Length: 300
Image (tube, rainbow, N blue to C red; front, top):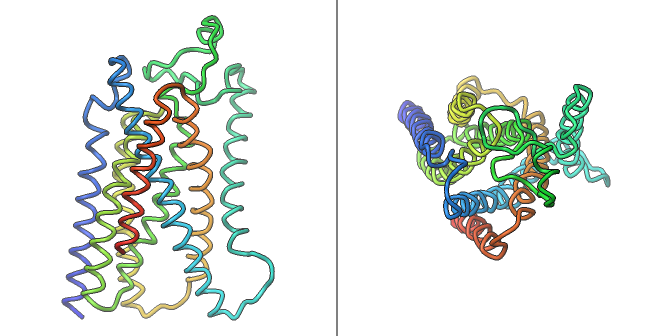
């Protein structure tokens, strides 16, 4: 038992350090934050963003939602709950509409404060020096503008961070609740590979948003702590022999999954696919990101 505890602590430290490493690559390298570079620079950043979109799409469809459906199915079977109503899917929808309602409330308050350009919220200039054009500039240009490369809203970036963080806690729980060291190592290696790609993609999205650089750093640090937190909670549950709480965990997973559906399909993918230029190349990079994550999922 003592050796198993040591293996879990090693997994905790390894996850923390590797997540910080891959998260700070886009956050600390100035090249990822430049907005006045060449056309090649913008194209490359756009393709990296498309790759991240493919990663998040695969994480949503092949990882987060299947994990949640499996967990809540197990919980409902254990509780002997049988209903013709699609309860698991309803919880995902609840998470989706929670984010939608919260975002529209935020937009309404901004409109009340006189932000006329908030009908296109992702073009809003927060004054952080991200090189966004103002609404007046866009109108005077006479062109139809879809979405600026740096124009992810800070609210949606936060919700993306929140949903991924919740999922990371549950991934850590999966390690902390294991009873054999071989299973701990197996799951830990899978999560290390998976989370390295996820945190890199998350960091790319954050540095391309209207989030202040200090907050980007804070987000990455907190996100890196989530899986270790889950491991610590799992160790505590194992040590205390607690069995309560699986239903709450499953419901939280469902809400996080709904949040992720919203962010993936209404923010990340439209952001790149609605902007002009290199459409086929963008789709190819989305497919590359999706395929890599699908391959990792297939390999277990």
